[in-house]
Image 1 (cartoon, rainbow, N blue to C red):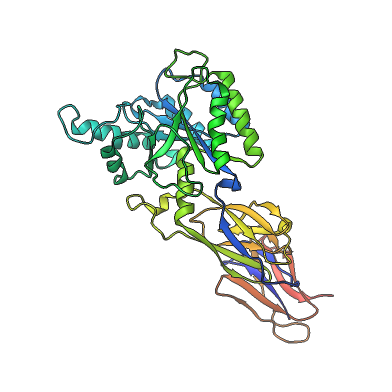
Image 2: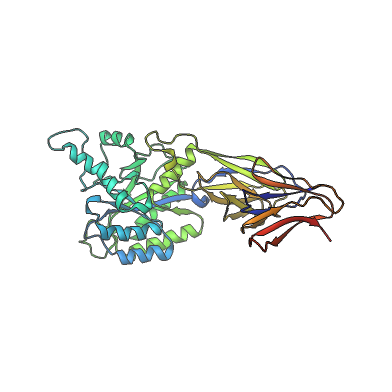
Amino acid sequence: MSRTSVKSSAFVAVLTLIAVFPWESVGQTVQFARWRNNATAAYSLCHDDYGEAWWGDFTFMDSILTNRGLTVSFSTIAGRLDRGDSGRAANYVAKGRRFTTHGYNHVCDTPITLTNANPRYTIAQEYDSARARIERMIPSQGRCLYWQTPCGNQSAENVNWLRTHGFIGCRNDIDGVNPVPYGVPDPFRIGEGCYQPAGAGAAALNSYAQAAIDGGNWASRQSHCVSDNSGLGWAPIPLAEYRAHCDWCKQQIDAGRLWMAPVQTVLMYALERSRWTVSVTSSSATQMQCTIDNDSVINQYVANSLFDVPLTLIAGLPGGWAASEAQVVQNAQVIPHTVVNASTIRFDAAPWGGVVTIYSATSVMLTQPLRVVQPAASRAGAALPMAFGLDGRLVAGSAPGMVLMAAPDGTTGAVRMVLAPNR
């Protein structure tokens, strides 16, 4: 007896026709990639002081980043953010860029201690109000959870306050590439070497990211605006230098050596990957299912559900499967995947998207609405079993000479599945 499985709800949303073929229960594995797309290293370029009236050449910078598909962070002075800024910011968010908080008025290392010089409202403004204003004016990007320190490092007192007030990390080390390849020892001590313009050239920018590639870790670079006017703001990156650096980054990305993403995105990825697990929870001749276990609490002051950056999974397929023809589905949506080799694929999965199912090479996905009709009996008069399993899949038994056929339903316009004699 052969078996045919159909993914179903009340009416079937996705159909999978599966044939039986020789299969070995070997090889099925799944793991998180160190960085997105299994790149060797990660890199974040952060532009400080967004919101200032003098902030550089937006048109040039936007063109350079967009044409190369690159994403960056903007450390935002919330008190300078007006409606014109937020309109531009929403466009940037749609292109994958993110806005972190750089204080409300760029006050350097505001002490938490309540003194006459630093009344409570200053503290509330620089930390709480700054984040709230950015979230209100740029709602499309979601929560602003990373603190980009103005003027250098933060005092231990301030960092300890940030740890318990809804932030996931902060810049707190001017120099150096983050040292641990597979984790972030302390998300509130993220190194962000500051770009210095004097005689630097693109090589200074490139070398920082290259150091991350050499060690397989993460480099986060602090910079300011982009302009040929050296008197505009603090240490602007000249246009030609910025273009050359972005060209170099694109080359490293295309070669699989670099993942370039905003600082909050990379930090979330690293924390999710280091605190959660992924495993193969079931497998058969036709499918394997993978589950991300996200029960482990990453930060007791930040809801786990806010850690929602997709994770790259590397899946080793069972023997006999063809990686080039496999299909990946999560939450009833087909996920694009990349073939690593003949028996391995990689893909991005949402940590809160539910079970990921990988189907074998003979699976065919149809996305039209379907209606399943069960005939009373075959030509020989024997009833054909058809039932929904506990996993929500419709399992239909068929005798020799019977086939599962698809035909339009003239009444509803849906596709009708019928077990019928194979004539």
